[in-house]
Amino acid sequence: MDVFLVLLLLSGFCVPTASFPNIYYFVNENMTWAEANGYCIKEYLGLAQITYPENNTALVNAPAGEYTGKAWIGLHIGGIGWAWLDGRPPTYYRWSPGQPLYTGPGYCMSTDYKGWYSVRCTETLGFICFDGSNYITYRTYVTWNDAKTSCENKNSALAQILDVETFDKVSIVVDKKMWIGLSFSPVWVWSETKQISTFMNWKTGQPNNEFNCSAILVEDGTWTTEPCIQQYPFFCSAVYKSKKTVVSMNIQTDVNLENPDTQAAVMQQLQATLAKQGVTDFKLTWTKQPVQISRKKIDDACLNV
Ligand SMILES: *[C@@H]1O[C@H](CO)[C@@H](O)[C@H](O)[C@H]1NC(C)=O
Ligand SMILES: *[C@@H]1O[C@H](CO)[C@@H](O)[C@H](O)[C@H]1NC(C)=O
Ligand SMILES: *[C@@H]1O[C@H](CO)[C@@H](O)[C@H](O)[C@H]1NC(C)=O
Image 1 (cartoon, helix red, strand yellow):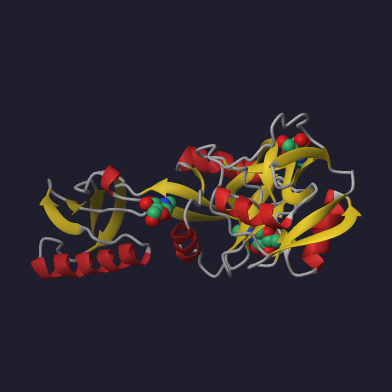
Image 2 (cartoon, helix red, strand yellow):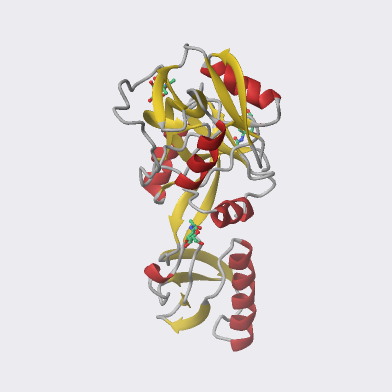
């Protein structure tokens, strides 16, 4: 019986990496957020970053086997600062003249028709809720937290003023200072680029700022905050690139591997095996080698890693 060494060369005739978008890669191993982050940095780019709604869809559609539970993404609390209720820092500010006098933990934002004032969150003011179409003012005096809860109980949210158009609408309905949905609180950033998140897909009632890390529920693509020491599988961001892999196999066979029919059959089998492992778009060729060594070469193999 002859022993053949079959050498598989998966090598790169791939289009250069830069022309491929980043992709997501699911890792089905239970790790803490920090462990997962370290793993993704070592093996890929970093934990998955979701910048646009279409990225969220792409991530949920990334192969994750049967897994539908929670998986770490790269969103975590990067510090504290002024942040809207979903953890986004303002890009538009409308300070009243001379404001802010105070800033830091424990301060919340209020507005009157002239602009914003930073006020201790424990003071009591009226508040403005937004129900999806209207800004509604309430003239009961409550703390910022109570105002937030009160709006939520009315199926609305403390008003967010993201631009001058909104400020103009709100300024018509306020007279005295009233709470809006801005406070000095945790700011959510992406671990890979340190970018502050503009797109958010929090599950209803989230973020719960008790926890510093966030996970995506693969089932529906919504995000939750989780204790960073929990162990979950995770998604990495990866660059779509070619990967060179040399696989050697010892095949014990008494069939003649020089026979073109046998070669074709072996190639077909290899192709099927590789395809099952997600390796597609490659060419298989035989290279003649010294006696008892058959060499296979697979060109144009682009792996999704
Ligand atoms: C996210 O979406 C943008 C815009 O569609 C795209 O250019 C980018 O490659 C996507 N990133 C990932 C990781 O899918
Ligand atoms: C991860 O942990 C969960 C819960 O403990 C367990 O059901 C699951 O099988 C684990 N997954 C892996 C890949 O070890
Ligand atoms: C969460 O983040 C905040 C703000 O950066 C920090 O003060 C706090 O210690 C962190 N909590 C944990 C459990 O790491």
